[in-house]
Amino acid sequence: MEQITHLYDKIGRAQIMAAFCVGPRVLQHHAALGVLPSTWFAGMEALAGEPLPRELFSFKAIAP
Image (cartoon, rainbow, N blue to C red):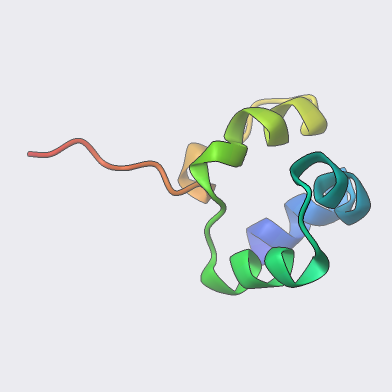
């Protein structure tokens, strides 16, 4: 959760909400879960202007 809220602070919650057409409750929900939707990865990286840790996003793992 702490890493996600730090990322929100770095990028700006208003920018994230506008980019993904979501409200503050959606951001709170994902912060509480401790994981962001994988579909947000490219957009969040673009907003951050730097590579982001993939483990913050809900990518599916490769099957063993």
